[in-house]
Each structure stands twice: as C-alpha cells, then as structure tokens.
Image 1 (cartoon, rainbow over the protein chains, first blue to last red):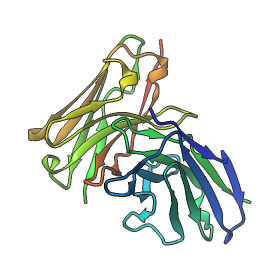
Image 2 (image 1 turned 120 degrees about the horizontal axis):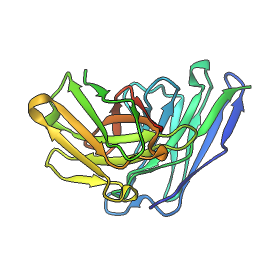
Image 3 (image 1 turned 45 degrees about the vertical axis):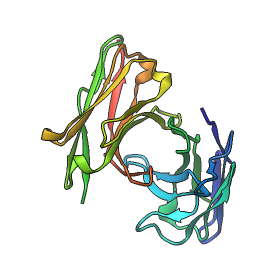
Image 4 (image 1 turned 90 degrees about the horizontal axis):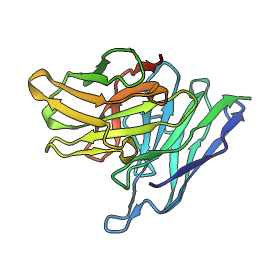
Length: 113
Length: 117
C-alpha cells in the first residue's frame, strides 16, 4: 500500500493568514501516460461527512472557494488556504487514488490562533 | 441532487456480522460507482471497498476476505457485509459515490457502528 503522511499534525493560524498543509506519499502517484497526480484533499468537520476540496492534486471541486488551492507532483503535495476563515476550522485529509487500494493521510487539524 | 443514506444496526457483539445498506436517492444508482469507507475514532479514514457500475468490485486486502459488497439496482441500494467483527471494526461508516474521475465526491452522513461485548 502507498502510505500517506501529512504534516504538521495540527496547525494554528490567525484569521486572514495563510495555512499550508503538506502531504507526502511513500511512492509517486503521478501517472505518466496522462501526467495526472492521483491525489485528493478532503475537509472533515465532526458531525458532517468529508467534503471533497481538491482532486488531481490541483483541481478545485465544484463550489469550493478559491482560497483553497492544491499543488505538488509525484510524492509531495500541498494544500494552501490563502486567507483562513473561521469556517475553515476542520481536519484535512489527503488521499491517493493511484492504486486500487486507496489510502488516506492521518489528517492535519487546522485551528484559529 | 444526489443523496446517500446509511442504515443498519449500530451495536454489534464480537464475532457478529456487520450489515449496512446505503440508499441512493435523487439519481440513478446504475450510472455511477460506489464505495464504503470508515473512520475509527482518532484514526485515519480507511477505504473498505468499491463497486463499479460494470459490476467489478475491489476490496481492501487488509480486510482479509471478511468483506462483501453488493448492488441492488431495483431498490437503488448498495450494501456492505463484514463478518467476524471485533472492537477494531468500531467506526463511523460512510457510503459514498465515486465520480468518473475516481474521486469520492458525494458522501452519506455516516453511521456509527460499535462492537462491544
């Protein structure tokens, strides 16, 4: 299985400031024939189902605010929240769907400083 | 607007069989792919399995033959069966839609299943 490791485990950011979350895969999730990274990001708030934010490493899902952006390729990826809002307090998971057996990161908890 | 709802027993004893159903409304179950995932308290999401509209099914190898998924188009439902449960199977179980891009874009609300003697 591909192991997904996120850093940091938790992050406290002031309102309006930038939050940078990292995700590393134990092997590349870049599929060379289509040059797509099979990497997604989800936002999770307790009591709600996870919400898809980003797929193909950098494509925003429908309805996701443009303050959320994804970048990276191969094994190293970043989710950036450009200007943290109160409603962004959540746990963020990355997920690889490169292999048949999908795997998720352990999550990064984002809080307000 | 597609809506998914999990249902089933919420409390099981060790060695029993977990059986959950996901009811799909607001769209056709035949036009998409479907998946089950779970979130144990304090741990990471765990992918359980995936059923494609073609009928192909993939399971998480870590579940070692305990898991079965099926699709009932006439009832617009898909189901999960996990045998010989232990406390380690206690989790919030989610059913979800898998998009054509292989991403999980619509999730059910989740159902908490506890395994305890």
